[in-house]
Amino acid sequence: EKADTSENDSSDDKIKIVIDPGHGGEDPGATGASGSYEKDFNLDVALKLFQLFDNESEIEVYLTREDDRFLSSETRERPDFANSIDADLYISLHANTFTDPSVSGTETYYYNQFSKALADTVHPYVVEATGFPDRGVKKEDYFVLKDTVMPAILIEIGYITNEQDEQLMTTEHFQQEVAESIAEGVKEYVEKHMDSSQIK
Image (cartoon, rainbow, N blue to C red):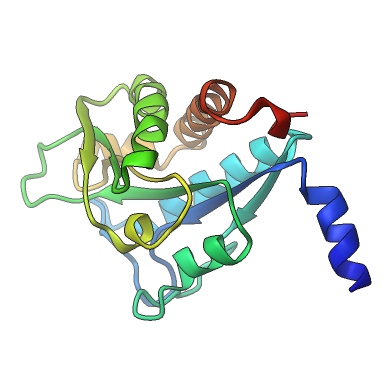
């Protein structure tokens, strides 16, 4: 009980954000043109974004995974975790794949209508940071978007099956720029759409 009280004291006035680096462990996700794995890219960007949010006093940030481990989609571990901590926002990070290696672009997905504003706000920031073609904001019934009860988005940052894009995506500089763009978009969303009493 004691722990509960202190937990409540510290977190009631903070915005809880869950960052979800897609795939991991035995599930590598997409394989890039040069053989890089999507799971590693997702985690690299997620860790950079975690640092940015962790420096914000009004944000309490969580990761669904902090290392290369497998989270089963069968057991819905990712959305269940976000729901169990009563998160305010959920951001899933991915890299895309396509059979045609010339395909390029950034897209953001949402499922529930209450998540659309988050997608619409964050997406332009990410497009600007990547410099990739804008493939738009789309509705899709991915389980991490469907099973979460808070505003949730899944960002397909770029196509690692595109050789030029993959080369960029595996650089620290690109990953940092993308992480900063997501953080900026989330801050704008919070200011415009969340109860100001939550922001200290």
